[in-house]
Length: 204
Length: 204
DNA sequence: ATCAAGTCTGAAACTTGTTCTAGATTAGCG
DNA sequence: CGCTAATCTAGAACAAGTTTCAGACTTGAT
Image (cartoon, rainbow over all chains, first blue to last red; front, top):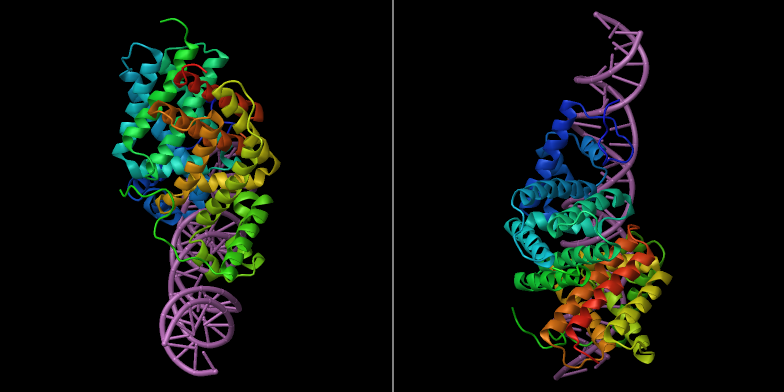
């Protein structure tokens, strides 16, 4: 029995090497196009051409533009989680460490604002048909935050706090991306919401 | 970045009576179509036909579908603010009153989930070209929350808390609309984030 | 090696948001 | 009233996401 990855819903058949390569080319092209121009610049025909794949094939791999961009985000998130694991945040309190982690992620996004635009817009625009994928992104984000808190076994209150932090994170990114909030303001919002953690971590 | 007075950008010429009527018909048609079917059901051709206006005219009044839906949201928000003013929340603490107010708004949205979908998706999908309008919605929301807190002259910390509450509000709505969070969970998230207020309002 | 099933390709078609155009209508003004 | 500029209308045209289809290519099993 081949060990199936725990993350995919219906156990999709394993991809051949060429298929894996195609999928990778597509995600790369998507990130590249998103990197300049953001959401609008990721045009399905261009992604197809740029990744040497027919349009129909692109749609077989990713059933919509939003699916594609959410998958792109999963990809980037994994990368980021790896980076963060290698250099964990150094704050004294859980709240400080979470804020530091999110600010680090934020600085990474600032380096590729167009890519951030494409991914975040796709994420919040996603409808029910993309729920499983969006949920996966959410779980990954939760894992990153819990890592920063240094918790293995969070209480329900702590999970609520983490959910609220994620809400703030996404929405603050949106306001920044659409030019309605400055970088400084996003920082303040993140620090503000992280104070919620202090309410759930009694001692320390 | 012009720090503009609170009302509008370039003083647009006042509308004639027939124009005001057209605008109203359009917004009504928009809300109607959104009411069944949500974001996707608001099709510009249908809005135009249903409000007895040529497509080009619709685009003169609202330069994009997102503009139209954000304007629809402004419209609904004003209505709601009026309703809330008439029956203010009754909690003892500021946090309770804010949570109660938001839950009341949430219940109103639950009665028209498709309309909520259209408005909230438009709001978070809006790009820079819609910033003034989205900002107006944000100011209106802030006003509602400050009303509930019973504050005339909020401190910077309090404004930060309000911003975070708004972030949570929008993002929690999104997760509910896309079926990734239950009504109960949204309630918990709202109550959780409202605790932030306690950190900024010393005592009653 | 061969066959069936599944996959990929290229191209056209369809949908819906958005833009454009030419001609009718309306509003404001002398 | 009659003029002019602005507005409105109907409809075509364009753009990009999505679907469809016939035929070529791979893959896996026999």
